[in-house]
Image 1 (cartoon, rainbow, N blue to C red):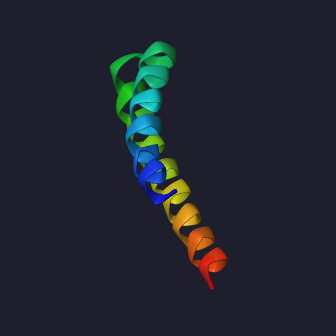
Image 2 (tube, rainbow, N blue to C red):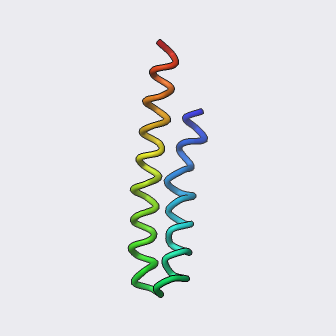
Image 3 (cartoon, one colour):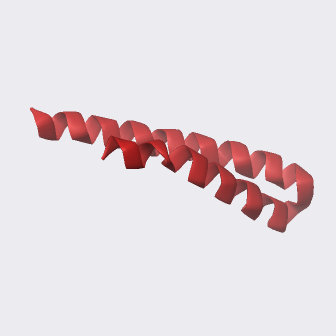
Length: 56
């Protein structure tokens, strides 16, 4: 479960990069990519927390 979560920052980072570039050009790509990485990190942290809670 954590292995799948490890891909979340990468997938969401690339999706944010592409979406930001489509909406606002190169400046939007930077902000979209960073936003995707932050959200992906939060998803990974939530999956790790949930896995720990389910384990105990």
